Image 1 (cartoon, rainbow, N blue to C red):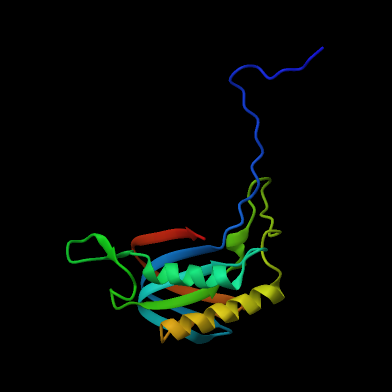
Image 2: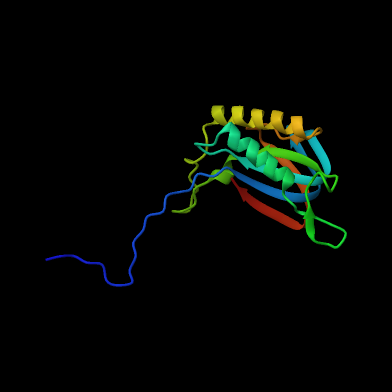
Length: 164
């Protein structure tokens, strides 16, 4: 007896794509407090939550930052999203957020297996921040692995999930 697949039935297996993830929010203001002290604050710009997954590289991280800076999410004089953060005279705040790497495919509790181990992710974050400050002075940052309280006012609202 030969087993066959009925016509029109297709079986496939999809692996999790390895992408670096950034969640961009266009904000009127944002500030970060750790242990009751404000460690970062900005007005008008992009608040970027960054997740590092296993397999991410420094090159991918730099490409992500370049893309964030070039991404046109600010309105021009005609009200179209045609300007990037620099053209709009905006600021940039970077926050490491491993929870963006959550695998939510099964169950009711996220798995963080795709996330880069903390020691490696800290190094990647530090390198990303150094690169960001070299190309855009005044970049504000969160504190890696800290319990941060982030206050923001989303403008629009505009929230974009960016993958590299």
